[in-house]
Length: 165
Length: 133
Image (tube, rainbow over the protein chains, first blue to last red):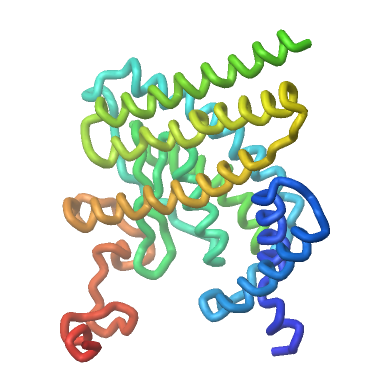
């Protein structure tokens, strides 16, 4: 392992932490930028034993598209689920478990997918299989579990595969 | 101009109120624990989201001050909410669900919560606990 690699184990995390610090300070000055950079270098360096592999973005521009798709889906799904909660009787709901087999292998990507599934209302990640090859998803109303699985794979996993792998 | 901004701010506040209410109502109304877990995701996404957009717009227009703290709240919520939901779901499966009731875990033998491997060094067995003390 080279010296630079050991000093900056996660360059993306360094940039991200500096940005978060600037946002926390809520104003821009050379002072806070410098302190943010110090934190951004120190925290990844100290915590690097817990993150042994470095995350690569194969296609960083896709992240923007992914975020927009997810935001739009959150708005749409919110309205759908609000209708279910307010106007549907409980016994007409079909809560269901769905298995989503994963093509993703990067831990960061799987975490992103699991988080996305939870944040879009109506679906929720409950568990990972013991060797990490599929996700257990709970759906609030899924008369057809296969459709839910296909939508998750089509909309989110395909894009994450392009971003990470 | 001010009137338009006020209408926009009011619109986002109303949206956040509606979804915050639906989230809390769903928590009471839905039938089983796993379904109840779905309700708060609405309150955290559009509920808090609408409130934060309203806050950013109103401080920017009426107080001439662009505050981006609100973006951080969104970021922290999006980091914390899925993890919390995941842990509650895991605890629920651990205590109330059997492997037969869950769907087939695909290529792997078991779901992680229900997985018991005596040779797994990462999982502390009762005897392992004794020696650690």
